[in-house]
Length: 319
Image (cartoon, rainbow, N blue to C red; front, side, top):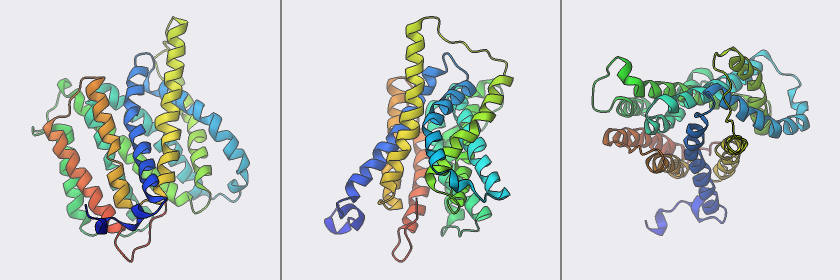
């Protein structure tokens, strides 16, 4: 690439480090399945998500207390948006994603999360009346084709118990839809309160729902008998909550504040790359040729949309 083709964002002193912050933050998302698969040996999906939120509560509570004044004057629409972000995006979506890892193709479940921005664009058009990108209809059909290839490959959909891997893909798509919707609802709430307050409420409001879901499920808690194994489980749980969760988001949003959307889309390739490598090395799952084509179709769609956002004359999107 010639020097002239490099954008001004990457020629500033802050641009290049910010780009790598997005790379590292997104790469940590790819590590998430490693922790969750190991935790599923002892805990259910709901139990894992409950305990992760309990850990995140310790970090969210002081932030919310210091910003409690922002809670004044909340309307019913704000409460509804917060409940969608916390119950839908933080609780149910994470449970669906974890269940998908337990019952499906790890690579498909991971790569299908790239659908989140498309769902966010559609919901933003519906709820926030935002304009759709140019040629969005064609690009969305392209992404749907990619989704089909990630889920079914080159074969036709089949029914029956043998298709348990496709169940995992469906759960993953459900998680992507809820996470994409949470992006839109979070954007709506940013007109009322700061990002830190919204994030804190996201974790804290999800706890009551997760507690109810955990108490009503039939599975009992099956912690390891050995104290050493229990300690390893606790460490694994803490790393799952803090590395792919809290720490990755801090790095990602810090970098995103000075990196253009199209370059952020490039940087986020570290997410599927790390995830696919871990699935191959640790869980011995290789990405298939149809999955690779499907992912490239989805990523091409996202890159085309983000490139439109970076066109001259358009305002930079706020993170």
